Image 1 (cartoon, chains in turn purple, cyan):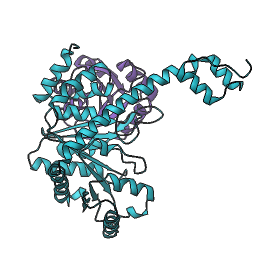
Image 2: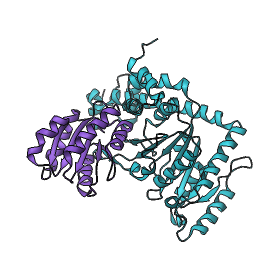
Image 3: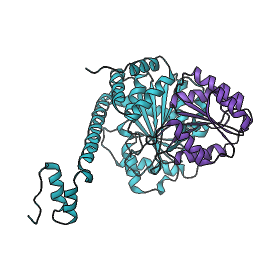
Image 4: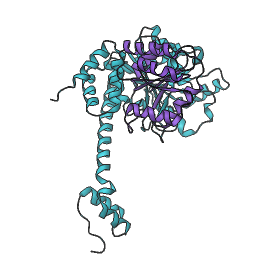
Length: 131
Length: 324
């Protein structure tokens, strides 16, 4: 899976901790680095053919960035990748994000084992390595 | 004649027309293995031969990714279309992996002429993924002129990269003389070109001298002598010279008819590896202890020794125990 940091947000300690937890759960995690445009994230998702695109957003711009990433993924013909959003997301915004196409949302404070279990559920396969 | 999966043919057409999503999916299929992977290999093989493969290996921290990215810049200046496969180790415990090489290749993020794919070793030893040869085949068929394979640099384990690439570049750092003798011997044998990266560090000249001395002592007269090139990848220094060395190796291979000969030899080695790997899995399944409880008991009770037990398994004949 891709762990991406779109937009201008430069704080990636959380994203890296999540990446390691997912690695320990059997995922192959590609970390994109900070400040990535949605088009670049979509290009990486296409080349790597990931199962999940994870957006880590602490800047508050999660609705706009999710919308533009979903559009960019479609334009890049990335089919089948599930989008998840994590970061400073108020509960009230979760339905809107899901409406935009997010398969799941993990606000700050979500327990790591819960996050990992829900990611595994998204790919539905407990054995093979998932990207 | 088996029916081709329409998916595979269509994906390949799309990939050759430039779709990165289609190419990404083809690469995932060959990683997964199985019948679709075989069909993809069959479709791609006749279309291969035009890409030149460069393997890049070296110890972790030697600057391989940065150097790979720099080499890619040189290739782009020469208007070559290239693919980079960056391989990282899978965790032996969880089977997962952090594939972090492409973070160091951001210079090429927006360049349509560079395709980057990360792969995990998934338990395969030797620094490569079991699907590396198949991935190279797909990328070659997709039309890339150069394929750079950046491996897990282990330095002390036999490396498979020279069995997968046309030229192998080994990246070391100054002060390399401190490492284990055995590691050095292995690297000397597989390297077609050496880069001493981080050459601004202390000991660069000495490392260069040592390397040249060791290289002078080995090999026959008509063998290729690996050049040693100091580089500072972070400042793009020495990288043009490094590329020129790789090109010299390529010319040498072509002018000695070595290129085709080596590619054919590598292809057959791939066939052997795949066949042996299948035979081993099937053998393992057949001789699993669960299938032979009586024999297991006989060995534990010491009425049958392990050598005779193995013989019995292979020949399929029931054994007479000591007590009969």
